[in-house]
Image (tube, rainbow, N blue to C red):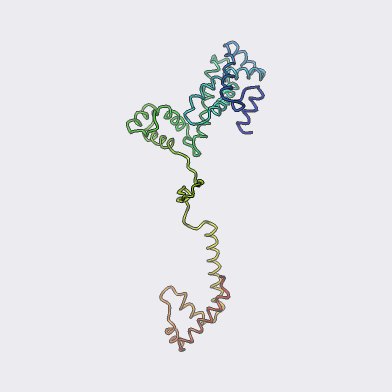
Length: 290
């Protein structure tokens, strides 16, 4: 089961509201009506979950903090992703936090859960920001979100601005500029549909190799091998004189012999050499594959 399917199943088993099930405004109004837990109630429910896997206790811990997820998800609206999807991913992080929460450590669930909520939303943003990932390492992921929060406009950074951000984030200017380049890029269809009849200058047009494709190359190589093999067999079937004339006229690497030169060599007329050559070529054509 994928993560989204698992989320729906877990929420339904706990009778939790799901953002996609109805309008976002209704969802937010619903979760805001759930009361916040006191410290005593939170610890009691957490112990019930850890000791007995009490699903109802876990449900109460989750629903009392759904409003926190809504608030955190709102901070990531600038990434162009649906608020409901951000909330749903944050809810996954909240449930992971409830599963791991230890009430004996003296930390409130809300403080513990913020890390898990943000981590899940970060994963979702990075997966859906571009088709090609903009950040893969932990350092790149941290730089991605910090740079997004620090950058005030869509304009390219100046070197002074890049230096200031690099100093504040404790990274190099090169790292800042490289991440800005990744963030400013856009996905482009390799073969977009053109509806107006105009010629398309899509990447497919200039990325396509002018060379033969692998199938064509293989076919040509096989044809060449057959021709060379057929040529060798055809020459074997000729008598010595005809073979010598064909090689001298057509298969020599240097300058080929003329009819008169071969006529003088064999002591016959040039016309006789031409006739021998013609018969030999006719015989060879019947053997060599087209």
